[in-house]
Length: 110
Image (cartoon, rainbow, N blue to C red; front, side):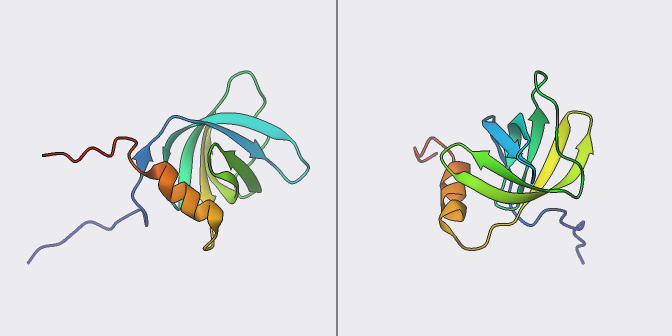
């Protein structure tokens, strides 16, 4: 018999360092960079030169390059580290995020 540890994530994560903009309901803006991303969310590091305007549990809209605006909720925060969970129904932005998460080099590996 084999036992597998519980899987914590619903989607595979990909390392990605891209700029991201975080907007809260009142229009305030924070900027950050992704450290990893999946179809279900992203881990972010907030930029030092701008105040972090979001709080855990707060709905936000994030702007991802080559994807557009995605609705999300802040699920974790520790200092300048932030995790957001995407609210992505079947839509164009979800399809663009799939392309964005794909490896950039499509050369087949032996």
